[in-house]
Length: 72
Image (cartoon, rainbow, N blue to C red; front, side, top):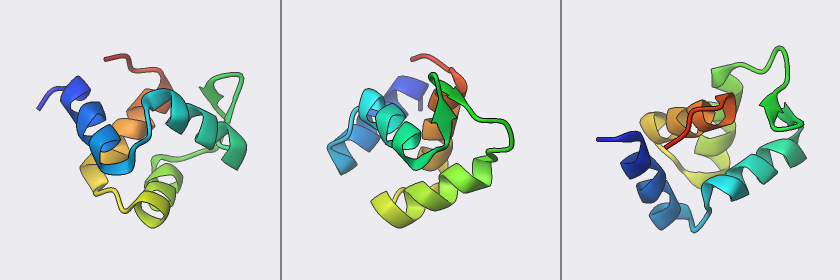
Protein backbone atom coordinates (compact mmCIF):
# COMPACT_ATOMS: atom_id res chain seq x y z
CA UNK A 1 0.00 0.00 0.00
CA UNK A 2 1.37 3.41 -0.92
CA UNK A 3 1.80 6.22 1.56
CA UNK A 4 -1.00 8.14 -0.18
CA UNK A 5 -3.30 5.11 0.15
CA UNK A 6 -2.63 5.07 3.90
CA UNK A 7 -3.53 8.76 4.13
CA UNK A 8 -6.67 8.23 2.05
CA UNK A 9 -7.78 5.35 4.27
CA UNK A 10 -7.12 7.39 7.41
CA UNK A 11 -9.21 10.26 6.04
CA UNK A 12 -12.04 7.87 5.13
CA UNK A 13 -12.00 6.40 8.66
CA UNK A 14 -11.60 9.60 10.67
CA UNK A 15 -12.84 12.38 8.42
CA UNK A 16 -9.54 14.17 9.09
CA UNK A 17 -7.17 15.37 6.39
CA UNK A 18 -3.39 15.35 6.72
CA UNK A 19 -3.57 19.10 7.40
CA UNK A 20 -6.08 18.40 10.20
CA UNK A 21 -3.68 15.95 11.83
CA UNK A 22 -0.86 18.48 11.57
CA UNK A 23 -3.03 21.08 13.31
CA UNK A 24 -4.15 18.59 15.97
CA UNK A 25 -0.54 17.55 16.65
CA UNK A 26 0.41 21.21 17.09
CA UNK A 27 -2.51 21.75 19.46
CA UNK A 28 -1.39 18.70 21.48
CA UNK A 29 2.11 20.15 21.73
CA UNK A 30 3.79 17.49 19.61
CA UNK A 31 4.93 19.90 16.90
CA UNK A 32 6.14 23.45 16.63
CA UNK A 33 6.44 25.45 13.42
CA UNK A 34 5.41 22.36 11.45
CA UNK A 35 8.14 20.10 12.86
CA UNK A 36 8.15 17.50 15.59
CA UNK A 37 9.49 18.87 18.84
CA UNK A 38 12.71 17.31 20.13
CA UNK A 39 11.98 14.35 22.36
CA UNK A 40 8.64 13.46 20.76
CA UNK A 41 8.81 9.76 19.98
CA UNK A 42 6.83 7.65 17.55
CA UNK A 43 5.25 5.89 20.53
CA UNK A 44 3.82 9.19 21.79
CA UNK A 45 2.12 9.85 18.46
CA UNK A 46 0.95 6.24 18.04
CA UNK A 47 -0.59 6.14 21.53
CA UNK A 48 -2.45 9.42 20.91
CA UNK A 49 -3.81 8.30 17.54
CA UNK A 50 -4.83 4.86 18.80
CA UNK A 51 -6.66 6.38 21.77
CA UNK A 52 -8.33 9.35 20.10
CA UNK A 53 -8.97 7.98 16.62
CA UNK A 54 -8.82 4.17 17.00
CA UNK A 55 -6.14 3.97 14.33
CA UNK A 56 -4.11 0.81 13.97
CA UNK A 57 -0.35 0.83 14.38
CA UNK A 58 0.42 1.07 10.65
CA UNK A 59 -1.94 3.96 10.06
CA UNK A 60 -0.67 5.76 13.16
CA UNK A 61 2.90 5.34 11.91
CA UNK A 62 1.84 6.89 8.60
CA UNK A 63 0.68 9.99 10.49
CA UNK A 64 3.96 9.99 12.42
CA UNK A 65 5.82 9.91 9.07
CA UNK A 66 3.65 12.78 7.85
CA UNK A 67 4.52 14.79 10.95
CA UNK A 68 8.20 14.04 10.37
CA UNK A 69 7.92 15.58 6.92
CA UNK A 70 7.16 12.71 4.55
CA UNK A 71 5.07 13.81 1.60
CA UNK A 72 2.58 11.78 -0.40
